[in-house]
Length: 102
Image (cartoon, rainbow, N blue to C red):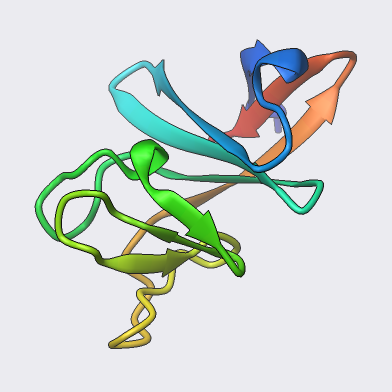
């Protein structure tokens, strides 16, 4: 089976404690580098489609800037109802590039 890793950005474009939004085909993804780790989530909030990459990141969670819904970066779990509402994707840094597995 073919590896489905997609090159999405330069590693230097995503500094520590930063986020960015990328479009891959029909998907909008929010990429985060927090505490030295990389995370990738669906870029549109499960609540009303807010831009997750523009949210505040703190203590391993991102807060949607529109209505304050919070999600764990590593799991996509919404912090109040504890349901996995945001899709997460495998992400890695390789050769100075950021890749996401779809």
